[in-house]
Image (cartoon, rainbow, N blue to C red; front, top):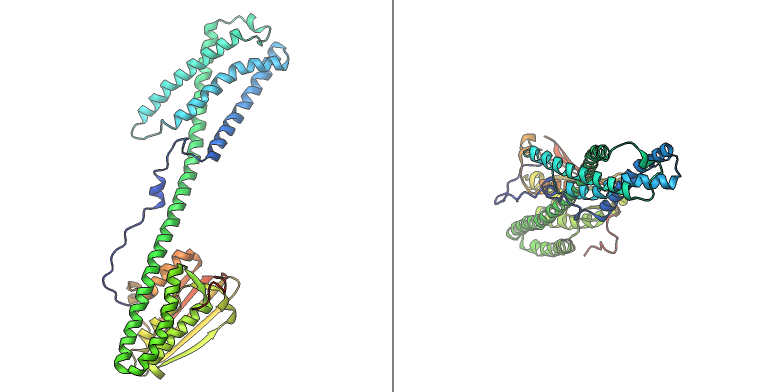
Length: 397
């Protein structure tokens, strides 16, 4: 919510690539997965075969009355082939991906691969059973033909293939979801960083233009006062250049207040007694961090709209306080206020730029609110409490 201001020459910024669009290109292959994800799949895969191996071992031991080690060898003849072949199935599922447009091709591929898997599994299992010296003693006496055994193994192989495919796609889907979330988070972080850099680049030129405009007006009306104003302007520029060079987004409120006082002193030279400043600054608040160039735009807004246009000038109240959760900055003037519709429709720099920086820096944890009527205009900025930079790092130049 801003006072209506006019700004020309704006160019629409290019829209950043969203995290969702970047995540759409996350590879769906094992080779590009994080090593932890690959270890997770391998571990889960091995553990998934354990219950089946135990079940086969108990069945062999109970049915043929053999020691557990012989029953385990017999169980391995059933479990080892599909377990080994299953490694290839898992890798194949990363290649055969679902497509709603080509779903017939998807199922046809899996049907063909499933039959090959089941045939290989049955062949290896029967061969292993016939040649293994660890078979139960009564297993060879079973009155069951090789063909019936092969058919049973083929059917079991198809069931196991379906289970493997289901498990693999579920695991890959979970990993893909996590990769997409991570990619989206990275893209969002890059977007916010780029936006903050762009916003910082707008702050100084905007401030410089308005300050030079004030100096120009002062040179015309009072050249001697303009000399003093240039000294104040030098202090302002040293602070602005330091903040720009360091690239930080937060400074101590003590620094920001000192900068704002230099700015007010310059405006005081131009406006004289027409500008009356009333302050209520909590000393505890000065030790906390605020966005750089966050207080000066509020003062500039009041001076430009409530003080300078009136021959009698006016009053500005500046208040800063802090509690356990938030730091509050308030700037109020006794101007004529502004129309709410015009405030909402405003696309000017000043307060709108500060609002965007607050959103980029703190998200929903910060706010900029305005209240206005025919007795004045108030802007309140709330930011979450932080210690800000150290006093040594944040020494006001």
